[in-house]
Length: 185
Image (cartoon, rainbow, N blue to C red; front, side, top):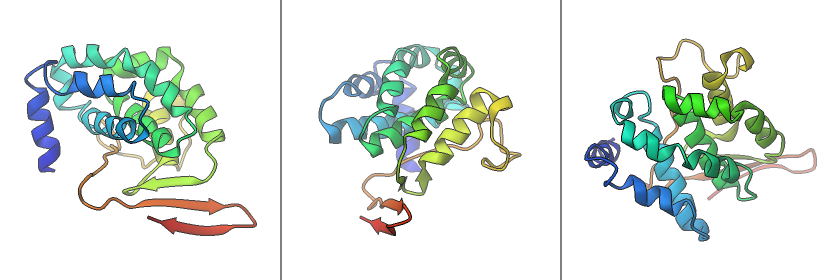
């Protein structure tokens, strides 16, 4: 949308744009600030296979943050896990970031995240399971689970974005045998 395009225009000015601040905010102890920073980073990384291909300075700035994303993917805060996994899946569309994720054995980490995920969290139509499946497909296509991710997607595959200011909906589905309900906020 317009917000994504204007953010990229700001980013095209170089590393002096908003990205260093977003990366710095990944260290915040405030859950709301951290959540917003993760969502912003996921949105920026949605451009990994297009606009960011020509901005190697931005990619070099993002590389050190991958370890922080891995830590946040193991968080007890389910929204942080979702945002971190979406950012990882989006980052995997960039050849350099994908290589770094492969070196860090991201598919193995994501398998552990999925195993420990608990109830499904969906935000704005983005599901954790979809983020994980897409990331694994991009990082190591030989381990992708058939039928989980749509085949025939363009070069970058599926992208995950989060909207703010347009009343996002958070859905928590509890699927245990005793409690089978969906709560929307």
